[in-house]
Length: 434
Image (cartoon, rainbow, N blue to C red; front, side, top):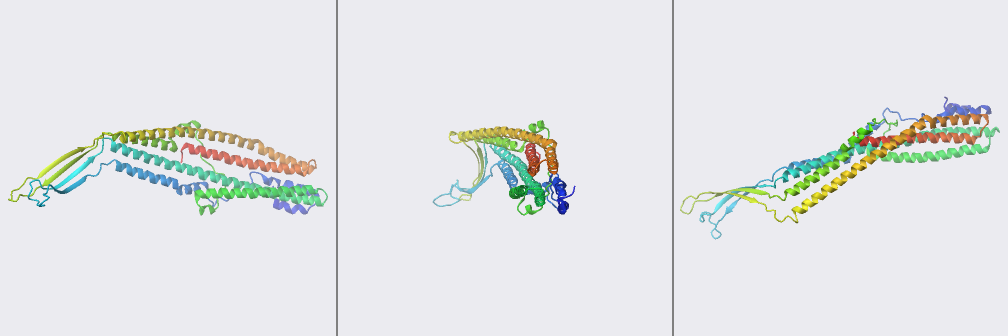
């Protein structure tokens, strides 16, 4: 098939060849024709994904919080530090004579406190559960980043390919204008055909400007994931190939282990350990104190025995109504709220799967319809309109409508492919596969 550039030079021939020029270049207009960016040196979607993951501040924040809770878990699993006591006890206030009174001592002691039984382990497990929640949160943020960059990439692809189709259509209508003008000059056409061709070209130019604006907006959204410096690099605008979807039952069975679900499970566990810690405060804590007292000789040079003391102090949690009981009640409410959040999210993620699975299947059916019927019929309609126009059976207006219908079908087919891919991206997120 010759290009319009080659065929444009034929307009100097006789009027009988003018209509043939349309047939020469008209099939430039098909979906297989968009010019893709050269893959060499251009950024691919895989490279964009890795770049977006490196720039993912939400995942980095979750990792930092995970480390914080991990350190707190280790710290909470340790007894309080012992206390060292030293000084002078029972010295005479009148004379301050260390040797005068028999009870005067130089005292040194050590006190170790022991928390209530179960408090240390419960607090440590609570912090570790929060650390596990942040680990799953970081993984979920990575998956959300992949969704964002993939959908943004698909939006850029859609607008880029739409621009190519519209530009090619503009070239076709530019040739239509030349043909109608030539036929009008030689008396084989009318001025209305010239005006109609120019009008449709102007409308396509407006559609092109609007699509270019949408392309700029899509690029700006993609820059949010990649950074404004990287977005200036040429993009490889071939249609991305995503991983094949697992069977439906496999996805549904794995939803319970999805990172977003695991985050909420760990929060429930953390809240339950919080209740255990609050309950432990109803049990008494205690402390052990060991003290050694040195006594000096008396004024007559007689030695005195040194003193050794051992003391145990016990907490008495007698008034629990406004402290321990309130803490237990608050923790129980946290557990209930966390479980409600988990159940609600289970329903939400199941609904999200069913919705996107339905969307994917419907778009898949429509894509097959366009592939098997709509696009071939649009092509045949274009060919029939061209043959009828060449034979003088139909007018120029019918030919124009056929070409615009073909363009509309190709743009719609392009959009269906992109929307199906977006639904596939959502379903891949629900698999939990990074």
